[in-house]
Length: 379
Ligand SMILES: [Zn+2]
Ligand SMILES: [Zn+2]
Ligand SMILES: [Zn+2]
Figure 1 (cartoon, rainbow, N blue to C red):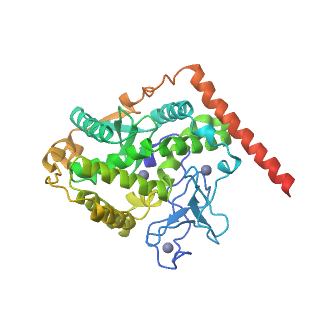
Figure 2 (figure 1 turned 120 degrees about the vertical axis):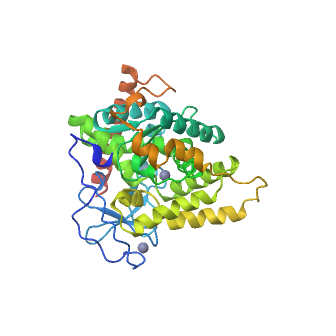
Figure 3 (figure 1 turned 135 degrees about the horizontal axis):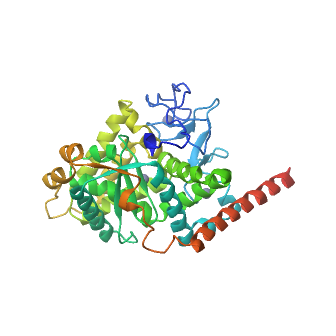
């Protein structure tokens, strides 16, 4: 993730493309963050206007990027509708990547590739604490994975990646920006919501099949590049807002202070406004924190007043995951540590699962060929 990979030819996070002065959609200046390069959009860096939330390529002329209505993957907008259907969904191949077995097999391949590339950090106390809070959140959320686990990636940027089995990769920088347990609950609940709604599985499989198909001869790179693209592109604005709503519901149900979610979002907003490079990928992957906070405020105004005093558990959080804990008690681990084992929901390590995911790749290639043939015939 981010700057920690060692051997994969990196897609530079910072594009050399000069900062655009105004958003093509709302014409307002759109902040100082440089464009972020992704594998999916090649050399074209992408940026997100922090005023209207639209994403666009840094090319000339800029093209607007919107989430596929079906799978949430970022695609160039067709026409002026503000919606689009990506190349795979328009060929109606959705069933290929909404299959649970394919999702878990894909996750195993991605974890196995990441295990060779990333460095993680851990401490017994922190790991136990994070897993306990993640389980608390998962128990409260419908369709959430039963045994979520949190892996801390040794990276100072704000990065999060939710995998279909409930493994959450969270960067050290992301953890360091949290100030209490309620904020942690909101952040973990947002990620677990992506798992519960199926967005995590859909996006991962969809991006992986695309990358691996393109890079069949160097397959490991494809899995990692897909994971990195997912970190940088997110799940699309509707899915991100849906995850926020579910996270807020969880916060309220567990009787945490919902204002913590707003404090967390405003802190991120300030880092983006200040042009902090640690926030650039997060700023591209998620709708503007200002919009997210405004939506949560409206939802809170609608929510019935709770009788019980909201809690933030600041002291518990500080002892387990505060600045001192992050600075003094972490040990470095090569790879994903204990997190690298097949997801529990299925045995995905055997040759059958390998065959399954590679046959999905085959179907994906076939879909591409059919699409290309259709395109040629239509001309
Ligand atoms: Zn704009
Ligand atoms: Zn799609
Ligand atoms: Zn998200």
